[in-house]
Length: 492
Ligand SMILES: *Cc1c(COP(=O)(O)O)cnc(C)c1O
Image 1 (cartoon, protein in one colour):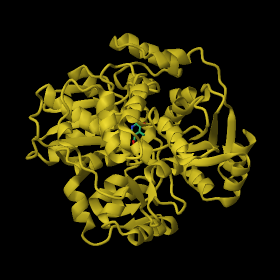
Image 2 (image 1 turned 180 degrees about the horizontal axis):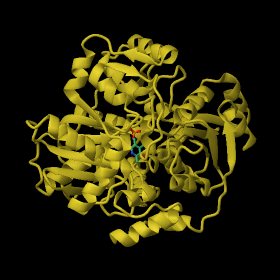
Image 3 (image 1 turned 30 degrees about the horizontal axis):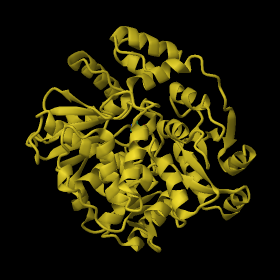
Image 4 (image 1 turned 60 degrees about the horizontal axis):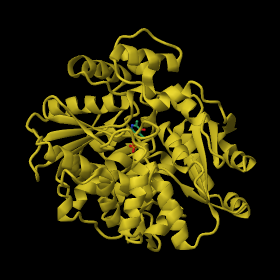
């Protein structure tokens, strides 16, 4: 399978796209040809385990890999999950269900991709004859970082550096990251917000001097967030799996279209659903849910992307994003795959912090997407409502999605399609806010809040959270935004 870049250039092999992550010209890689699901996936039979479903989806996008190798990779990756179904669906009242994507080692949906990616990276390096170490550089709004650190920890031939915004992630997220083990990992707090950190990483990728210094140390750079196609493809798989589970338990009829509602930040998770739809999975509307940083809501409603606005810290920090990297892949399709149109929009964004969709693209966007947002008060009220009326404890990101579900149904009473809502993190990862939302007194200490939450709700405290209590801090570096490169080199 070959991949093309959204900003133009020569097509490259899937293995190269995985090793590179981001293209040299700043663009993102997308499949050169449309990818179609095979009939046995529509839907998968009940007895096909998750790893096999995922491997089959991966095989459609990654033709340089032997299907058996992909199966081995997926079995190893998802063997570490604490639910036998890996990504189970949990039915709610009124024709809806949660898709629980947080059963991996770091308790957020990023594990779905980042337990697979390191295995794809090392295999790609072998296939490409790449002898240098692959150095992963990633900015995180909270969850990607820990998932990457877990995924790459002690993987031979790789190194992993994670940048997170100082005071911009939850206490538990920070604690998860700074206690990371592994001889090949590095965690750096940056003085700035997530967008600053992400822009800083992109700058390092495009900085010839930095790349040369890294090359001298025997390393080549790659990225480990949903910019990397090797992250995006495993995310496509869970929509096929969830659809099969809904059909197999009789909540929908095979072939029936469902809507999917996704709490969104970098636009990776929802874009994976859009790819699933393109491949033939029966999906109606995609509902994009944002928090107070609702640049995507406004974009989908007006066609104007405007990042020139205040940045708000919210209780759903993994969605505190004003520049949604993966949107570029959708823009490429909306612009009929014309790189020059994408470059024009991205140049505008860089120069003026906004851009506008050309021509009739807005109509096509709105046919497939609807968009809503929830502020923190709404998010907390939603957590409380689901706890009280459905006995379901959700994290703030998931609650943003559930708020969008309610708003969509109020605005579109005619649409009776089944609604799947992504549950993207364990409520325990955001224990302080979740505990407060369901009426517990405020608790300054994140670990104690988690313990109290477990006691009050009689839900089990997840093992990875319990382990944080005694874990030692191993990373204390803080960097200015314009010194990120030096900080990486200093740690080598
Ligand atoms: C990353 C993340 C999101 C947003 O996903 P994108 O792919 O960036 O849109 C939502 N919720 C949680 C818990 C996350 O970690």
